[in-house]
Length: 268
Image (tube, rainbow, N blue to C red):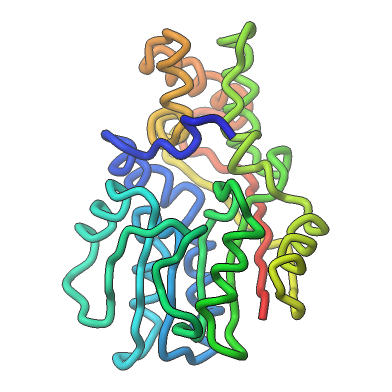
């Protein structure tokens, strides 16, 4: 993983939440919150919460007596998430590293994580932390992106950037968000952390944007791809328009849509 892969600062949280969340994250957030709510938990921990799309979905689904502790490694992302929520006495916000959770053992009935496991340098260690803070019979529910070829916008963005920077293509999307998609590897990591009852299933959805430029802006300016582009000396706006042109050629001008796929994991 590159040192820039976890860089969510500056204007990235705002663009991420405004552009990326509706583009690819919302259907999976609703799915994850629905799965958690069906368990009837009294206490839920969310790790790698980002700008809070799952937090908002959980708050809408869980009863008044439920407790939700929301964490993320990146304080700017957590700060932005709080601006999107009205004051909710059920929710506690706390900066935390998933690999060193600052909680006592057996505190939570469920742990949720939306598209965060790909960013953990030590996944087995992080999963072990999750298992430690869960009560007996608890569930760890999380999702990860499928292979980049199964996620059409991300695939085309990566191809376009490869043409724009042929000597040193930015590979963030393939390397990190879409770099942890082997169900056998995920299952083995969870087993190594002590989980035994594991289900992994693919979940397809459709990514839609009002224009190729909107989709290009989401990827090029609202993710750590931005740091890779800027590090190569490219004009961020010029690169965004180049990627938008590539998306337009493949998906058409005007409103565009593409296939996305994730894996949903339930480890008990």
